[in-house]
Amino acid sequence: MLALSHVSKSFGSLKVTDDVTFEVPAGQALGIIGPNGAGKSTLFNLITGNLMPDAGSIRFDGRDVTRMPAMRRCLDGVGRSFQIPQPFQKLTVFENLLVAATHGQAASEAAVTDLCAEVLDRTGLLRKANTVAGTLSLLERKRLELARAMATGPKLLLLDEIAGGLTEGECQALVQTIRDIHAEGVTIIWIEHVLHALNSVVERLLVLDFGRVIGIGAPAEIMASKEVREIYLGIDV
Amino acid sequence: MSARYSVTTRTPASTGALIAALALVVLLALAPLYASRGLIQDLFFILTMLTLAQFWNLLAGYGGLVSVGQQAFVGIGAYALYGVVILGGVDPVPAILLGGVAALVLAIPTAFFAFRLQGAYFAIGTWVIAEIARLGVAQWRSVGGGTGTSLPRDALGDMMLVEGIAALFDVRASAARDILAYWLALALAAGTIAGIYALLRTRRGLALAAVRDNTEAARSVGVDAGRMKWLVFLTAAFGTGLAGGLIYLQKARISPDAAFSVTDWTAYVIFIVVIGCIGTIEGPIIGVLVFFLLQSLLADYGSWYLMLLGLIGIAVMLFAPRGLWGLISEKTGLQLFPIRRRLVGGVLTSKEG
Image (tube, rainbow over the protein chains, first blue to last red):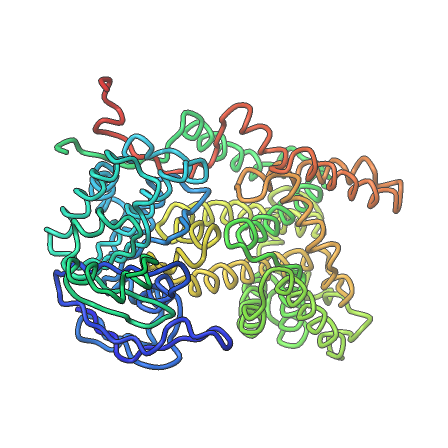
């Protein structure tokens, strides 16, 4: 589904993505962890086309998309949420989804109305459908990020820290929603600090530090490795 | 989730507003029957300024493209009309269309350069390009160079439809020309409003709002942000060029300084949109009426008029940042041209829960 090969990106002299190579097979869920500033969100921006890599190549769905703009990748099936919510402020919650569904899936408004309502229902935003997005609370904005990404009809869904700040109950509900999406065959890459939520969904974990891949493998294996515990959890072992 | 959902944009006021708007257009179309020539000329001014304001609002209010160079398209539209009439002997009425086309042609290189600039730099860039166009046209000897020229008498005399209108209303040819120009201005203003409203109600219109609110996020949900900007810029240029041709057809006299005036064709237009309410169709309509009233009341006070206009502009921005229409619609919830898509049906309209 997605394959990165020796991808690098620098901002000035700072190397934020350093020779990253990994693959995500179709239908799998991959978690990405790493300390703040490890380059997780930058890696997402490279996968979605919001940033272009300095070196390396990215293949999606059997095609080289390294130089393809974000808009085209979305049409091909890459959906994303932003770590810092980026709603269309003056549009309503429903209109936010409507833009995503009509353009991401190249469909008419009438054709996607029920889909948008369904996504709003699944993400707990249905009652806020006609509320202007700029007036939402932070939690509601995070849900809107997920809902809007889902509305584009993605084959690959990239989630960037959507579980932070939730209560235990809300977190459970979110995990269930993501499991359901995953069960429908959507490939998922999820950056998350809330590890118990992440580990209850993903099949594999990737650890990033200073832009480099430190480890990739089954969650239990990764969490047990000495290197990861030192770097990521800051524990002296 | 068995309940079916649907989208509506209708508001309680919108159906009434549509009927009232159609009635108003009919009433205005019949104005030559009951209005004096002076009133017809005033209405012509209002309608052409309204057209310019709607296009600037499309650019800045919906497209986020704050241009200070729209006078380039007024000027080039007007000069293209004079060029084909004087040099090519074309009838002035169809020549208006060529004015629009000329503006469209100028808009392509303008956009190519200006789109590389952001925010304030874009504004200054468009202004600079308009100045270059003015200086370029001033070199064009056969339409009067820097001093300008008039539309030839015989071209005006042979203009299509004028003879018929003169006979119909039993007026002289000069009054008949005013009536013709007025009808064209009415058609242009009504067509502009209807066209922009129709655009805003399509999924492209929704994408335009998304790009304005957050370009990066819009790209990430599959919106072609670049194409939306081109669409809006070229549409506004074409419409502004049509208005430019029509305005100078009615004036029958042109000079580069007047036709490319940043005050007349951009500053006043921005004033109209800002005091009315940017980002709405209703705003420029209210704005142009206020602007016309102020201009009529203060016409005798020379430069005091401009200073007062500036003060009013500042006061509105400080105390009613959403303009006069913004105040009205906040207080009353009124939307005459609604584009807000509301989800209705299912649990949203059921009573329980």
